Image 1 (cartoon, rainbow, N blue to C red):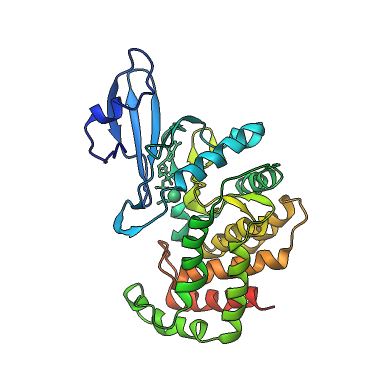
Image 2 (cartoon, rainbow, N blue to C red; image 1 turned 180 degrees about the vertical axis):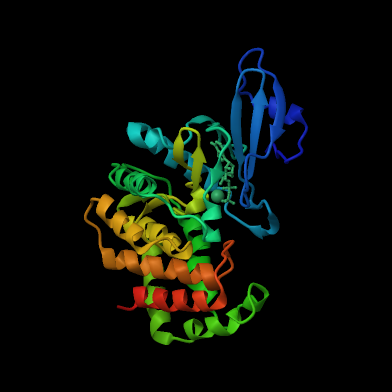
Amino acid sequence: MIDIQQNSPLTLLQNLGFWRAGEIIKSTSVPGESNMNLVLRIETNLDSYILKQAKSYVRKYPQIAAPISRIEIEYQFLKQLDSNPFLASLSPKVLHYDAQNHLMLLEDLGEGSDFLSLYGGQRQLNSEEIQHLAEYLMHLHQLEITNFPATGSMRVLNHEHLFDFPFLEENGFDLDSIQPGLQEASMPYKTDAFLKQRIQALGNRYLTDGKVLMHGDYYPGSWLQVSSGIKIIDPEFGGLGDAEFDLGVFLAHLDLSEQAEELSAQVQKHYNLTVDWSLVQQYRGVEILRRLIGIAQLPLSLCLEAKKTLLARARTYLIS
Ligand SMILES: Nc1ncnc2c1ncn2[C@@H]1O[C@H](COP(=O)(O)OP(=O)(O)OP(=O)(O)O)[C@@H](O)[C@H]1O
Ligand SMILES: [Mg+2]
């Protein structure tokens, strides 16, 4: 396998067997924050591309293993969008897929920024943005998918961090290192047998294939603001699952970024398909809990009291 590194010599990239006659790589740069994969912007004398390569580990934490098949899932997901012009216009086109080297060259959507800054609590999404984000899901969940590769290994990885690890009483993760007092605040959720039973049942459901193509990680880090609008990237946790999962994650992040209540109501209004909204609430609840007391922390600006309030609210989403 051609193992491209962030500072790799350009000759390695030149060997990819993709370039047009006379195309010469001029430079590479990092287009935005990424943890999981190697993501590079490649500028040539003719064009600009985004290269994404999966390794058998998390790029930022090489000691943590991660399924290398995630690049194939992302590839298959993006290919499915080709049949729907609306969806295809909102994600990068795949220009080259190299299964052997676990990499893809994607259309460069241009310089942009994700929406992680929402967690600073300084910014509200506007109605058009909410509508756009809800309509994307509505179209995605209506795609007719005939076959999609197995996504078990990625699902198992995500399952651990969503439904399992955050709720272990002794998981070795000292939440006080994130915020003093958070460890104690987390304990009621780690010792609540009834809640944990609910979460376990939901987790088992998450692990089984559902009926629709879900994005699988529909949160502000997967929304990219570029000059032509908001694009949706990074579907490596995608696959056949519950529409309710994407909706629950979406709504959870509106809560975590302190968006006005009415924006959540607008999501329901614009997502004009029949779904089980009580299941949405359950996924919403578990996503909030795991983002507050699990390992996948966010750049939140919430004080401890606000986190306690949100934890309690998440519990009500799961138990109603
Ligand atoms: N097609 C694209 N066009 C322009 N910029 C892009 C494109 N794809 C990715 N980027 C930029 O690169 C960043 C990282 O990409 P991406 O989120 O796909 O990587 P990742 O390794 O899966 O990240 P994570 O660790 O968050 O899962 C994005 O936040 C964005 O800034
Ligand atoms: Mg990713």
